[in-house]
Length: 156
Image 1: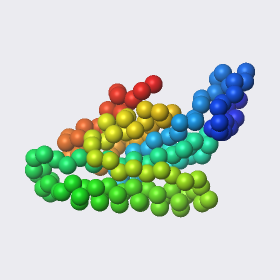
Image 2 (image 1 turned 60 degrees about the vertical axis):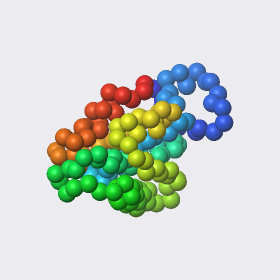
Image 3 (image 1 turned 90 degrees about the horizontal axis):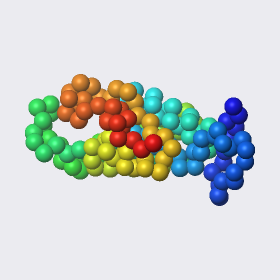
């Protein structure tokens, strides 16, 4: 099978060899949480976007707990937003270091449960990429497994 490269410019033309090709015109969405596993997934997402000349969008999501959390207490929405901003900025630095001369990357920092945010933001994307393990057992207990939830809710 010849996958070749397909540029997403203008309206795609139908060719016989296109029948088996995956269209990547809508891009790749990658969720980051600050974990090394998440950053490795981001590297993979960037490679996929590059291989298919697709747009890459990096998303960080945060939830403000409604009740005190025994691990460090409740942070303000502004504090959580700023922390997530830093995670996304580190992701951009990492991408820049690994992809010199690479294309621009869109970013978003969004309030909401990570899985819901990623699935909603990826409605028109061809691929959602997240790490398989995030920030640990406590966060998984509080928020659930993002990768499992994304797999269950993703459009396809």
